[in-house]
Image: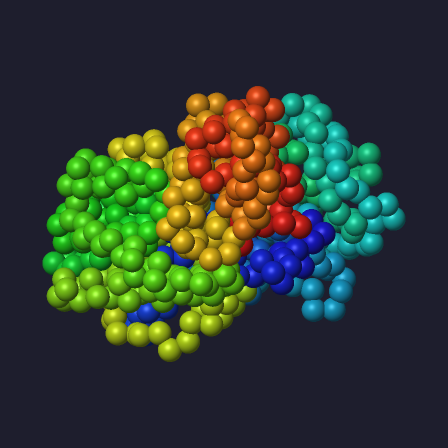
Amino acid sequence: MAKSKSKQKSKTDVHRVSTSGDIEVSTYLEIAKEISGEQSIAAREAAPGIEREAIVVIDFGSQYSLLITRRIRECQVYCELVSYDTPWEKVAPLNPKGFILSGGPASVYQAKAPLAPAYVYESHLPVLGICYGMQVITKQLGGQVAPGAKQEYGHAILHLSDADSPLFAGLDDSPPVWMSHADRIEEMPPGFTALAYTENSPVAVMGNEDGIFGLQFHPEVAHTPQGKAILRNFAYRICGCQGNWTIGNFINDSITNIKKLVGKGKVINALSGGVDSAVVATLIYQAVGDQLTCIYVNNGLLRREEVERTFKVFRENLGMNIIYVDATERFLDRLKGVVDPEVKRKVIGEEFIEVFEEEANKIGRVDFLAQGTLYPDVIESAASGSTASAKIKTHHNVGGLPAKMRLNLIEPLRYLFKDEVRQVGLELGMPEEMVWRQPFPGPGLAIRIIGDVTKEKLEILRSADFIVMNEIKKAKLYRPLWQTFAVLTDVKSVGVMGDYRTYGYLVALRAVTSEDAMTADWARLPYDLLSRISNRIVNEVSGVNRVVYDITSKPPSTIEWE
Ligand code: XMP
């Protein structure tokens, strides 16, 4: 595809590194501890008795590279994304069964165009080049790529010239595919034949006897409905994968690894109420039981009933060790008079670390810090050359933080996507309500109150937020929507209630759909539902006399208002 990841990002979203409510917390912790000597474990070993296998996606910078990885995992084959300049020593431990070369923004005939590392061909493993990846194969194996006379973007119909190719097993005769390319294959490399064509691409799919294939279209996107079948065929029929990447295997293996690593050591984990830290805690608890202590800091910026709900699951249902700290007063004191959103974040981050360290010190010797880092965060950090913590650090300018904790990291979810984390949570028996929780920002309600944060405003916002959640859940929209919440603005306007003139707050309602929080669209909520939410808020929440609905998408807006 044409745009690179870096081009897509505007300067302003650099600091918004997370798609998860948990990362903020874990990042603060990461900043607080000494990174040196860290030992991070993540379970990507195959379960005992099962042969390790993986498809490795070589990344040339397409915005869809991660999606390819995800699609392959959906076929129950383990898959990782690595940059095109990754050395073999880093790839070999995955025991690759095949390579996929991603799309990318470059042109192979440009000087310094990125190419596939030699091991891709020297390993004699199957290779599937997608779009730019196909052009890379063509160039490296002796064919010719030329600028397309006609650019081809959007839908096309694929006509199979060799319907017997294992790549096409089970496919319809003329499946629709999604094209996005300018360059095209002028001459295939020696030994290759065209396996399918479209109106504008005589070589839409090519292949040779050694299991090297090229696709001019994008099988990973939803606009290629049978694309996943092609990827599955590649993984199973061409690479010979067994499909042992299952959530059950992942859990068993993680537990074994965590036990081995932790031994008799002690682990701490910051619970945030979010899915990632909750799944991490549950997984580690299953592995080492009471050697795990969770620290749950109430920063006074949580939603109504949040603390109770979290406790119910972790302490009552699972019986975990939890240290609960109600630090509301400390946080609110520090936030007094702070209106700048970024200063709010900084203050909250610093206070969190102080509280966390105080509590951790009380436990005595601790060896490990568990974190809910997810795969997209890992990729994002690698791509930008900085860790999530570095970004938040720069952004918050959190210099000179105490760095007393010398802990090793345990990041059992480091190689998982969010949907896989949810599956792990469900398989571990966590309640659906927790597993499907919408993301909630680390700084909590503080960044949903425009202007300074006071107890009175927090109560108003909690009441409004509670109504929004209640109605959205009743309408069965909680899960399909990425996030839904109320924002307490600093605008006051005139209203009339009964015979009285009122002068009250304006509450904004935000509901968005999104895949990953990088982009989002405002949700087309039914009018009746909007009306019910608005009526209930103005009737039940004193101090509010007007509700508006935010109909901007991201970009150009952000999901949160601050
Ligand atoms: P924006 O507002 O940038 O939000 O579109 C993208 C996603 O990130 C969440 N968000 C945060 N999460 N700390 C967090 O842990 C933060 O400071 C923060 N700011 C935004 C937001 O809720 C959305 O899911």
